[in-house]
Image 1 (cartoon, rainbow, N blue to C red):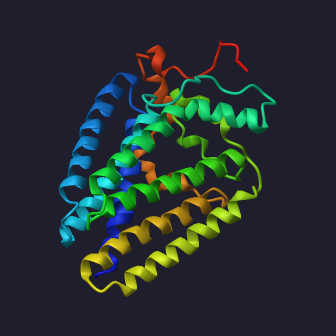
Image 2 (spheres, helix red, strand yellow; image 1 turned 90 degrees about the horizontal axis):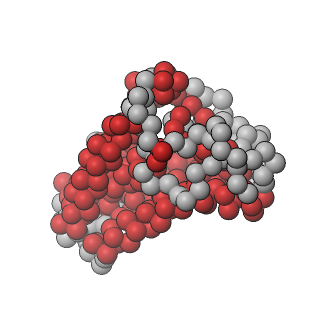
Length: 275
């Protein structure tokens, strides 16, 4: 149970939080300000908890700090996919755009999002710097690494780009999804994630106390999810079934939106694309 409980907890937290974000970002646009507002309060609470628990090495402190780190990351995902924190570029790339120019456009679409990730990471590190309980920081950094690796692989080219997970109002992101049998980064990414998972499980097995076993097991479960997520990019698996409860028909959801402020209108229908 000392291993099964934290692993099960990490898997459930990842699955439920991901599904909740999918569900929120397909609601009518008028609800986004409330979703992001509530998520911002959760982010503030998570940061407070990480700081308050930085000296708490109890089992409860480990779980709470880890959860706070995951919730802080959830704000990043929700703020991106609702369109609140994206980047200065709002347009898809024109046909034929490739290479470093295409990569620069991808950065332009996500620039504020990437900066926000760094700001929160620095905040968490400052709140728990040198403290005994840094499980929230470890969780956040691990999720960041998973996110960065997956996005680079999708940009370079994978078999399953998972377009169904991109909400209609963020269709601009689809021009940066590349479908290929393989890219050179993928073997490196999946190998690194696998090695990282094994090392974290070894730390969990060799940990002297229940608290450390739980902490390393929580991180090992997240790292294993990174391996799973990377293989989902390549294998023909019905990934959407994992979150079927949170993914109603995207097209129907988009039609039901009766308010589309300019800030959220990222679908390039009429605007001539800039270089």
